[in-house]
Length: 88
Image (cartoon, rainbow, N blue to C red; front, side, top):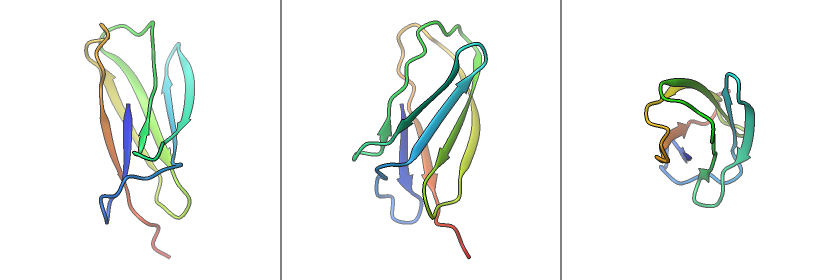
């Protein structure tokens, strides 16, 4: 699960695009709900696999980061991402 919040106000952000790519598992895209959460499932992931997360929202700087799955045995990982408004 990826939780997206506004980095200035700490309010949750609805409608942010969240893409997760894992080698051999393709890319999944979800949009954050009213609580700022986007949910993903990788049923065939093995331990220590790397995945890339890309988060975008209109008028906010995008975020790209890399994480590793440490224990794929039905564990839920929560990644918190704060987006900051784009400065013109």
